[in-house]
Image 1 (spheres, rainbow, N blue to C red):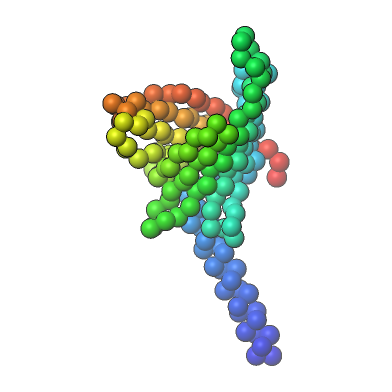
Image 2: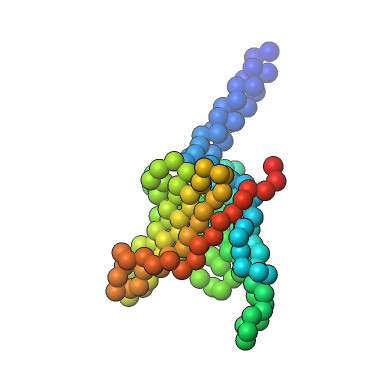
Length: 168
């Protein structure tokens, strides 16, 4: 009986530890799930998924975008991976894409259903800001902005999108 109780207690404690790890991403919970891009130009498609991984120690976003041929530009695909993690009490993220880009971000959650990822200032390098917010209609609005090396705090829009949650 004591062994069964001890085993049950260990199981409950282990589930609590996993829950506590996942709660480390509680402010980002609005991102979890599968998302399909909407309101895209003709022929474009894409979507992304946010899921917990590595026993709930990281939040992983995988993204795919497909672009049709246009003018002199051939059809193309873009894939990227974003890994959000806790380090030294802060949320951080590392981004990798099929074009060879790597961006390191600090993640901020300034208000409910809002996440902003900002890269560090590095002399002579542009800065990047990736933002998400969920609107009242349940859409996820995203933007990617770039600041020139000589104007590190002046972000200019590069890409914006809307997505709708799909599946269960």
